[in-house]
Image (cartoon, rainbow, N blue to C red; front, side, top):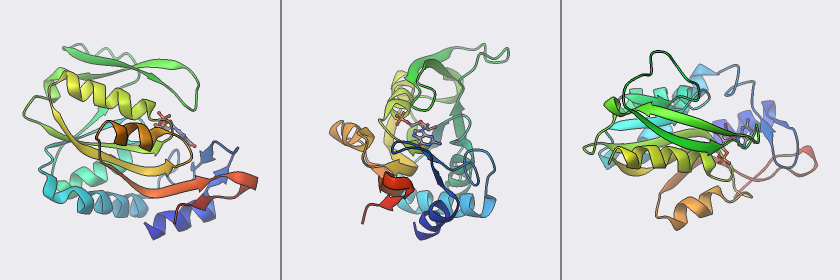
Length: 190
Ligand code: 5GP
């Protein structure tokens, strides 16, 4: 997606050869017009797949997921990372190792919102080693729902997430595929 790549080139900050900071438009300040385009692109790629729900992870997956949900006309569920007094129903729970924090945390969604009748699109901001995606897939599996595929805003193709997910048969659609972050420069696949 060309507009996203241009935004990454103009406003992304390479923190290391492993980490890209996109606080200017996705992870802290959000660019609504770009999010709308991102939602449209995900919807275009998955429109004919019979999606009934979108599942993402708080907080940074929410903006692109909501825009895709708006386009596809389906609800968006975000897995929560924190204990909440209001999240007392039957919980589906999984563990995720955070790439950016290097710690393990528990994520949960209420079983009330997902059922075996659902066909789910998983959306997240980044794909690195696939831990977040795997934890979301685990939660969806616990509900007995099926998975149409994943929609990733920024994939770091030099890490193993895509290979891991594809080896398990999942479709991965990434809107920007980063080949390397060497010498402070972002290089894209193709
Ligand atoms: P994974 O679980 O695939 O290893 O990493 C994906 C998760 O870690 C995403 O949900 C994202 O929040 C975070 N993440 C991974 N790599 C980066 C990165 O380079 N920059 C930012 N801002 N977040 C990242």
